[in-house]
Amino acid sequence: MIRISLLVWALATFVEAQATTVSRASFDDLVQKSTSIVRGRVTGSYSASRGSSIYTYHKIQVLERWKGLAAAQVEVQVPGGTFQGQQQNFAGTPQLTEGAEYVFFLWTGPSGATHVLGLSQGVLDVTTNAAGEVIVAGQVTDALALDSATGNAAAAEPLRMKLSDFSNRVSGALRGVSAK
Image (tube, rainbow, N blue to C red; front, side, top):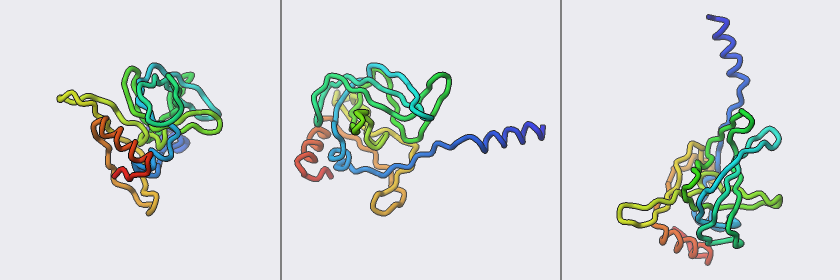
């Protein structure tokens, strides 16, 4: 019994922790730093390995666009997933479901790969409330968010509003009007 306990303890010390810390992004930061902002439906996904990391690639059918180049579909790279029987999970990654709609704040880098800006901060769930209004709401995350100015833990302030109000805030932020 003691040998088994020691073996479990020894193996646990070799398992790499996948903790994530993100800088808390304001609405204006997400709008300004994104290369595109779209409302889309997840139509499929697959995972692949790059070096020692696994990524999941989500295919998004674009339904509405507020910023960025016109495209009917975009592929978004998210860290983590399952590939060839191995699984990697990272705190703070957005949870996406095939067939569901989301609003995405995206950033496309020089390599051409498109990422969600700020991990789960850059994805809003799209739902319809009892009154039939389309609502966008931020996802709950397990990542530690830090205030970029102070370096202290930032309070979670999940975004929740009607899609029409969101659209007005994005337009205002793009014009340089504060979205507060």
